[in-house]
Image (cartoon, rainbow, N blue to C red; front, side):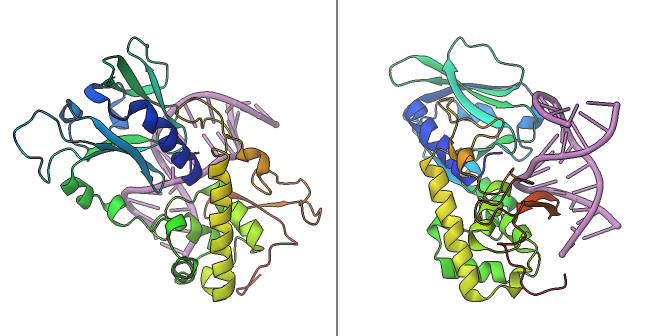
Length: 292
DNA sequence: TCCTCCCTGTTC
DNA sequence: GAACAGGGAGGA
């Protein structure tokens, strides 16, 4: 369940392992793991890795131009490789002779700057994730990309709050909506709402502007703390180095239904909001507006 | 605006 | 052997 802090950690740990290496091939072991809108992966060949970044929950492997081509890259040339890990996706760098595991879906071959051959494995047990090779043109055509909301850590709280309050759905549903704000998933939505003292079912439009801004600050606070701890490892998530994150030890509500609230000792309640398991403190988290 | 589906490993 | 985990697409 990589969310923003986990994907950020994966990008940061993956980059030094593959930056400067050149793609020499790709093998798709499970066809549905390659997005339907992807350029053919053969077009990767010869492109060096320029860097690894993140946008929302997407890992973006930037491609540098092929060094020895006379033709200039244009709008339809491969530009970046996007990877959505969804629930159980992982990216690991292995030696050139490593054999795929039972959940390996796509294998990228790379030649490192030192001449060594490496393989980048995209593993994904539940096969929800995907890889997608994009040109500047196909990136601009990708509806998901075009409509992705702003990065919470790079957006002023007042602007984020304005976006949240423009909807009347439950605030948790709005936080999870990637069109409103990018990168927030079930864990950090619950944690931010607890810190802000807001009931997850509160209609977003009923939250006063100041409280909505406070929520956005709490959200950024919990995201930064989680990044500092290399994310949260619940089940499958690992950094690109194979290490677990540590922020799962700092959860105040997520996964703690029935346990005492850390602030008031009231047993934490469980609900289903926006189709997602939701944990909250019925005493500390205030429900504003709307019917009971 | 909400629900269902996709998918499979893990837990009860 | 059923329930559960959940991001995003698509449909009611």
